Picture (cartoon, rainbow, N blue to C red):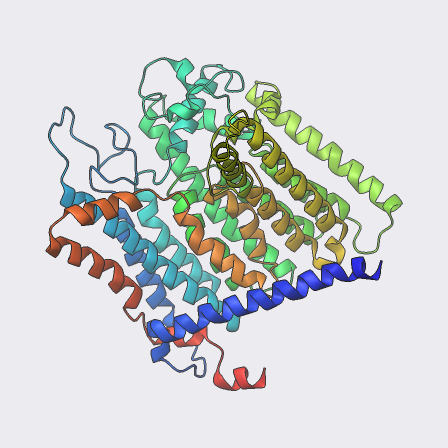
Length: 537
């Protein structure tokens, strides 16, 4: 019995030992092989330097925008009438330019690496030196976001599916029964990924109502609808910035640091604004609802989180955490019953109102697992299933199908996520319920059937104002690696370099390598603790 009781603490000590060594190795590599090593940590001299990361981040975003201007850029959908620029000419013939393809890829990777470097150092400065002006950070957000507002939809074609579902909604075709291909052949259907062409929508009624409203405002113009959905996500990021500052103050944290870790997060800017994913508007309502609950407005908090749930279902986890912690710490189970009932009533009324407004019933609940058709190694539950299937087939067990194995591994992943979430809910008073909610959302993503980078934003945004200890390191790690999950063109880059002339190859390597090595300015020295602080610790 004593061994069983000590096992969790042993696992915890092992994790801390491994994680601390890994973090130390990363910091050593940064100091030794990047320009950070040129500066000795010294006294902090104030926030007048903020224009430098603002400008560097803007340059990084311009590089990413420049990559999308090429007609054969692999980071966007190369089809006419899908954006205002960067489209192939109507009836164009001939072989696309290899030089332009490589330049597009190099600009994208160069911009991404520069953005990650700038944001990472800025986040570290904010951690060590609180008190930055939120007004300055809002201007930085505007500067960084502008190129993404102009750029065509990047990395994903989901926004074209949203637009088609908005057109269906406007014409009273139920997206919960039919897929976008039910619209026939028109501008809405052509850019939709065939994988989702006949797949009903898993999105809640609130999003369908917004989607249909945008389509009606655009006068059923496909491109205008896509632009409207992009602007919706721009507003969502602004709402995230407002909500995270409100939440940070409610938790006694620095709102500037939380703002940088959430609204200025590259994952948010690139996938929420750049990709125009509806996860942004879901996360916006979720973080505002959590902030209101923390600031002792639980009914309004439940209303906003219920609205988030009526966009995408995972936000419902927030309802459970708010209802359970409504009465504060050490409340008995009997005292928790009333707030749970109140939260249930508010949620039911809110979702029912949005269901009535959208007019398509509750069919979305049956479609929540529709993304399970995607099979990606990025999702551990799916990757393990595919690996096991390959092993079974290698030893001659061909009767065991991939579908059967995936159903088991994905179920195990889901049950594991549920088990950890229940434990986090039970321990949320000791660990902090906002922090526990953020971790639970990340667990459901990582252990779910599909891991998309924009899914990570759900939990990372909440952790931006509530993380503890080494969670800061993992928050940064997921944020800077997330945008590279499933990023196209890596193979094309290598193939293009191998088949290009040596001068072009050397130039491409030099451009990408230069982004990693170029000094970013003396302000980066303040991202390390001062020498005296290191000695004292």
